[in-house]
Length: 349
Image (cartoon, rainbow, N blue to C red; front, side, top):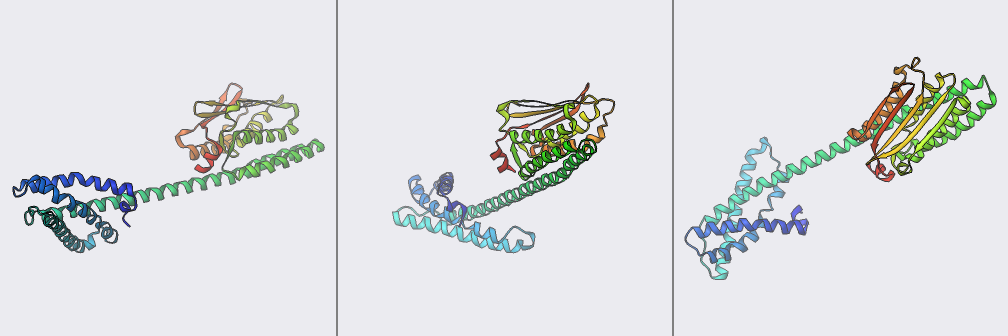
C-alpha cells in the first residue's frame, strides 16, 4: 500500500496539495479561449481528484524498477507508455465530466499533454522520496552500528577494569598478611563484600551516583584495614545529585590511584576527599588525595585515568569534561557530565 494512502492525514494533505495544480489547469484551459472559467472549473476539479490517485501509481513501479543506467532504456519505454496512459486518463475523465454536466468539452490534446507531464513529474517525485527513505534507512543503520560499537567498547573497558582493581586489592592483602594476619583476614572479608557489590553493579550500564559512591566507600574501607589511621576519607556529597546516573565502576580507578599513588607514598598518610554536586544540568565529581610531589610518576596513573576519560568520551562525547593533575601537594581529578536519570540513561545505552 502506498504510504500516503495508509494515513488519512497524509492523504488529506496530498489531495490538498493538488489544489494549486487544479487551479493552474483551470487557468490554462480557460486561457485557451474555448471554455468559460466556470466550465473549466467544473470539469477540471473532478478530473484532478481522480488523476491525483492515478499519480500515486508510479510508487509501485519505482520500487521494482530503481534508477540504474543498465536499465535506462526499459525505464524510458515504461514511463513513456505510462505517461501516455496517464494523459489519456486525465483527458478522458475531463470529457466524461463535461458530458455528464452538459458543459463545453475541453480542447483536444491540451489535457492529454498536461496529464503526461504531471505523470512524469510524479515519477520524479517518487524516485526522490524513495531516495530520501533509503538515505534515512542507511543513517538509521549507521546509528545502530555506532551504538553497538559504543556498547562493545564500554563492555571491553569494563572487562579490562575488573582484573585491574582485583589485582590491586589482592596485592594489598598480600602485603598485609606478612605484617598482621588478623587484619589481613578482616580485609579479605571486606574485599568479599566489596566484590559482591562490584560484580552486581558492574554488569549494569549505569547506576545512580549514590550506589557508585557506596562502592567507592567499600573499597576505601578495605584499604583502611591495611593503612589504619594513615588513610582518612572525607565526603562532601550534595543530595540533589545522588540520583544522577553514572557509568558503573566509573570512580573505582580514581580511588585506587588515590590510594596506590597517593596515600601509600606518604609516611604519615593523608586524606582522600570525594565531592559531588550539581552545576546546572550537569553533575560534577571531584576526587582529591594528598601525595608526595617528588614521588609522583604520572605515567603510572595512565591506565586508570585513561579508562575513565575514554568511558566518558564514548558515553557522552563533547558533553563530558575530564581534568586531572597536581595542585601543590594535592592531586585532583574532576569529572563533569550530564545528569541523567538511571532509567533514561539505561534506555539510551
